[in-house]
Length: 223
View 1: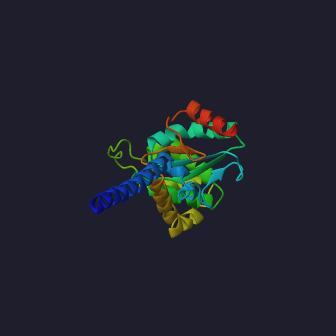
View 2 (view 1 turned 60 degrees about the vertical axis):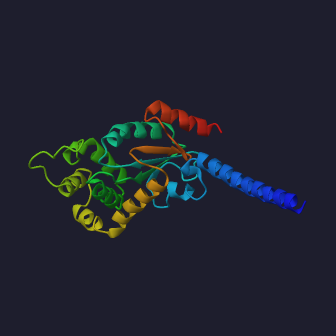
């Protein structure tokens, strides 16, 4: 009789342990279903206080783009982003760095330095429009005798009316490179593996086209 009681007790303990493990596994599986960007510990990684943005800070809908200034797909998508941002002035568009290419981190520092003179978006526009002047194309070697990227960025600065000497000084500030590094770390934590990557109120845009971006924005506006 005592042996049977001990056996039943052992079975009960095993059942309890199995139940606890099952509950923990269920909770773990449920957590993994939540997009990384929407988890409470990662939401602050989407938007930092110093992230460049367009639109109202208290917007109901926020679109976050992780971009690489040297990325060809980002350059192709840039006019679409500008168009959609103009179409939805009530939506906030936030820009973060994911410097995956060789010149991208340097480009980010020049973008930030241009921002010190109020010309952030003008510099972004010219970098994308004239990306072939400084960026790598599918890993191909640069054209012979092409100036270094920093020289080209300074020329861009002149073209958009920046104080060139101030640009040269500001770009040396280590905070700009640190910001690019922080953005990249945030992107990694959010599951960003390529550029451009968009999040609309924390939901990742899975199709990189204008209609998909517009549709997701409308969905969030209607909630």
